Every structure is written in structure tokens, then in C-alpha cells.
Image 1 (cartoon, rainbow, N blue to C red):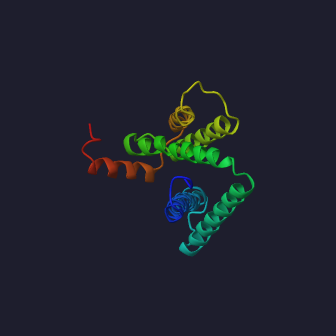
Image 2 (cartoon, rainbow, N blue to C red):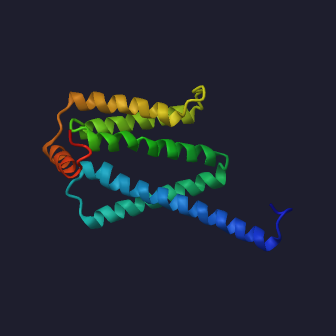
Image 3 (cartoon, helix red, strand yellow):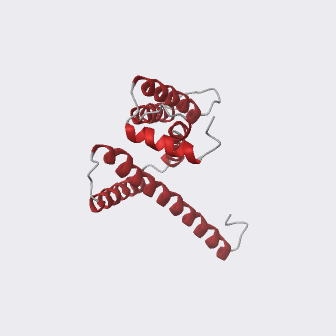
Length: 178
């Protein structure tokens, strides 16, 4: 770029690249902080005060950002792998979303098991660079995620809150009703 563009334009392009990286990192960090607080810790500590929730979210977000900065500085070649891992990891939320919206038999235990299994597969496939013969690694993990979600959901009973939420959703969504 430096050989083709004047220095002032190189600065604009570099600034745009930096801002793009900051935007992606902040969205990931905020998503992870909120997800950890509400969906993981919040399931075990239901009486958490809003102040405690905010503090945990801030600590999780700061920890993620510090860890990311450390890796970017000391292991810069991991950036592409971490990006792939993050996208494949976020993909694992798809089965949970579809099951929660369209399958009244889905349970939170099944959703947690599916997410856990999917993330383990993402970690193994991406972390150990497993040859998947051109098949998307996130899609493979999503397949096992769905198997775990369905299996555990069929082995457990949905709680009353889950049933009520599902019934409320389908009552407002004519596309879901039979």
C-alpha cells in the first residue's frame, strides 16, 4: 500500500483498519462479558443483584480484552486462528436459538449440553487443525451440538418457565403455529 498511495492516504487506510479491529474486539468482548454473566453465572446465582451483574460483566470484558491484547502482542500468528475460533464458537448459538424458538421440547440442560459439546468440537477441530476435507469446522461442531441438544432435551423435562416462554412465543408468531 505504501508504494501505491500517498502517505496521507496510507494513514487514513491504517486508521480505518485500526478502528475496524477495535470495533470487532469491543463487540466480542461485550458479548462475552454479558453472555458469561447472564447465561452462565446467572443460571447458578439467580438472585444476583444488578450491581454484581455489572461488576462481573466488566471484569469478564476486561479479562477478555487483556487476554486478547497479550495474545496479539506475544503470539501475533494466532489472530487468524482466534478469529476463526470466535466465529465458529458464535455459530454454536444457532441450534440453541432455533430450538428455543421452534421446539417446545428443548430444555435448558439440552441447550447447555449442545453449546458445551459444540464448543469442545470447535476447540478440537480448530485448535489441533484437524483436516475436515473442506467441510466447515463450525458446521461439523454444529452437527454434534444439535445431537447433544436433542439427546439431552429428550432425556430431561422442560421446566415451567421454559414451557411458558415457548407458549408465549408461539402465541405471538403465527408462522410457528401448526
